[in-house]
Image (tube, rainbow, N blue to C red; front, side, top):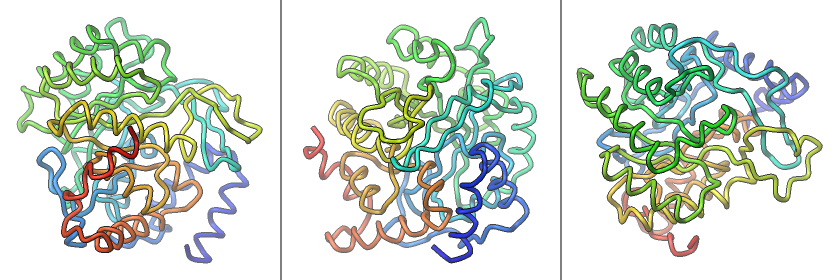
Length: 353
């Protein structure tokens, strides 16, 4: 991390977290944040549900909710980025304050509640972007007041799908009341059926991923895998934030919302390994939760992930953490004799079961 970036992070951490979030996006949009460009190393080249990636390190949804900084984020070193979540109608989300740093735990708690400008505004920005080598996906959400939340996901996909490279069905946020109920077998099957019908109407059949919670039982995971395979979705993102607060030290530890960052790493990686075992390699998995080093990205991959995503790590490590993780991952693969990152997928799954 450069002295300038360290100073910038120090200043941002003196501000309210949500205001700091907004200022970091402003810095990206106005060109104030230094960007290294894509990390393009042959050993890191891979494919994810048919999408070619320069590297398997991606940006998780939630940072660029309204697709306002897609172009600069595509030059930050990521192999792919995900924006959103987007809902059919704009909504303000939950009352502030709704974002909290847990500095001692290298974590964050948020209860945003799908605050976003709606699919019309987000879709317009995505339609105007210039396609490049870094795939851009959209996280699909449902309005809090919707009578038929399952239909909301399909609506957003139908509207924005022509302008993105992949989409994610987000039924795992803990911040919209009863949203996680849609992870149940019957509800999930019906939701994904509607989403896949909307996908069939798109000009090109983009991959559709499902993002699940870490707070699920083995039986829950078995049901999710069965539904995922039967509906022919493209993969599973493992995992969203947790409602667990085990072992936290920060004064903000009891705030309501979803916990992300370092404390989630072990829990999310165990769920990832279980899913890898249950899917038998039939579905690509994306590992999310607590990734802040190359070694942690490597552990996710060896547990069964074809790619990884991160977000909270940037709160503490800045944008420079992205190329550091990607290049460090390349070094670890070379150390262990892997000519390609895809050859390492699942090789350490047993360590997490």
